[in-house]
Length: 325
Image 1 (tube, helix red, strand yellow):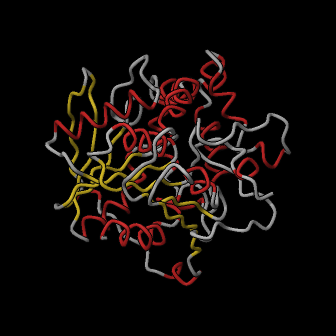
Image 2: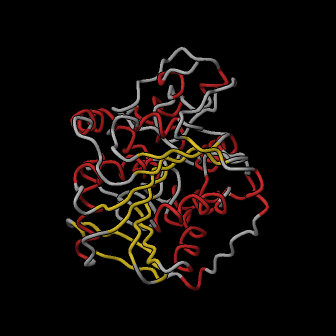
């Protein structure tokens, strides 16, 4: 059960902590449970500044707080910039400019009909930051944001000085999962095939967006009460919301081809791979082994897939020292 295949049978966005004892890679550090006693971070939404910018002909929404070195925060599916609110608050308090973006197709950004492969989205994010005047910055990506972040770091290595990749594995780097798995494993796999089918997902989820998304939040989180599910349900229930979300999955074959080429060279900047004990565990680190020269992996305790909301205190214990180096 220690092979990469068995640990990443869930090829992206979120996945299952296998019901067995896993020997962690030597560089993976599991944080002591005491950090869970930290006081909850309080985010004041009045402190956030909302902005819009036209990038490659499409409107992109991003939110900022703080001043100092820029950190680009890229959310995953099915969430929006809002998932970063606690992380943004702590980054600003520690002297950083936090920039949380709604990638194309999500939140308040435009929802184009095409261009959801990670190469195209990474270029859009790079061009956005360039338009804002940032030529050097760190990136933190969660879930599909991890796919986009990896593409940015590989395609624009002179721009990204550090990158933290959180709670996913990357298509084209991790082995493809089998379709014949146990039901308890399939709970984290079924959506990869479903979301890629043309037309059917839109038809079956129309008017059922709440039920569809709540099923995901219920089954992929450990601290369910901390996830702002209704915010994301409202966003993805708006016209084109789920269609654009599905488009990231429908672009997976194209993303895989791109990543197979990216894997021919290693990332040269420091890379922090973060998993959670009730989700991907050490799969993010294992996915990136051999793909980054300077790689560190950590696992967060008592936490599910949505780490930015379920356990932001623990996340910042790892993230701030990494960024401060």
